[in-house]
Image (cartoon, rainbow, N blue to C red):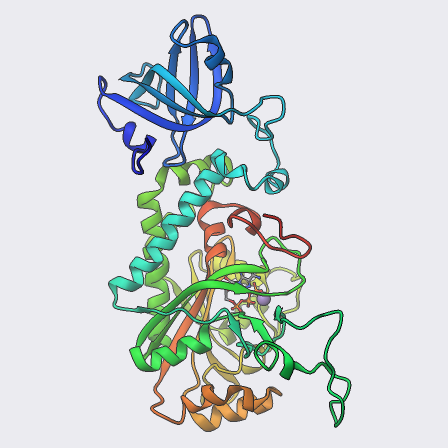
Length: 467
Ligand code: ATP
Ligand code: MN
């Protein structure tokens, strides 16, 4: 019967004359005089295996079932292929049909489907050229990320998915509860009378799905020095954009004994490493994206992998943007957050390479970022890349107890909820820094795919959680 590891990818590398058995799904079938051509794919590589069936080799009943979408096993011999772009093809001796696919109803017909339609058939779109390539790149990228950190001795830490603290203090969280929504327990008396009594809930207080693993990663950095998280993250922001998902994957390294300069160096090295890895291991997939999705993909990746990133402060960035000969949709002034149009101008027109912007105004960044001596800016960094804008956000963290406590209070956060985070600054505190990269944003960058829903297997967005 079947064994794992016998892939079309391997069959394509074997010499003519070898007898092989191939398994896969029929992409297309073409009939010409006396011979049938079948493109067979098993997801192991971009290239299909061409199967050639001479008329009379197979019973009519079997041949009839070899249609787009059917799953088959082919036994035969490899022969040199006269066709361009492939060394060998498989001359079929026998075919077994595992599962037919009625051509009258099979939804994934040859070409021309919109991405929106394909999203509705996410159980079948994975068999198409585009999504085959997307998920091979996603796999290679995930492996490259682990390899990068593991090679450098970073500890992989699993931070909790259910949490009772909000990392950013910014809301947009999914609640987690076992309370009966039709019959909520209420607080009977006192100042909170009438409010939901979460002491009766599963965790005894309100709980949520995590929006970031950073705060818990900091706990581990202050014991293992260099750590990283790589896990699912949830945000209930009701923004129907092509760049936001309700469930996505985030990578968050955190380094003790590291300042902003070290953080910037690591982020640059990291981006170059993962781009190079994917270019080395998924070139046929990237070439497909370059040809069919966005013809700047390869050029931009090459460029990012080989150029030195520029460094400027937020204050310098604002002054460059103020002098820019153009009108902005979003106004530019010191204190304003940089919008996508500003980020792209800096990286695509001013510097023509990736740019790291540092030292943002404290008001527009999270409470945990280290306050600079000017009292107005924090040690934040955003890495901006051509074509997409912000791709990484990070900072040196505030390691001084008093300063951190004051910032928590000033931002109107409940300091009791951060008791353990504050204690890290009381017992064995150390300078530390880290950053976050959204896996799907990086995948959009690598593939040129325009909608984030098309780089995750089963997208969750407002109003949609099928499959
Ligand atoms: P944005 O301004 O695009 O909403 P953010 O400032 O909320 O991003 P962070 O809180 O810094 O983002 O999160 C770290 C990274 O996670 C981002 O740089 C981005 O790559 C990714 N990210 C954030 N929100 C989402 C989302 N809703 N879906 C997918 N990826 C996201
Ligand atoms: Mn956001």
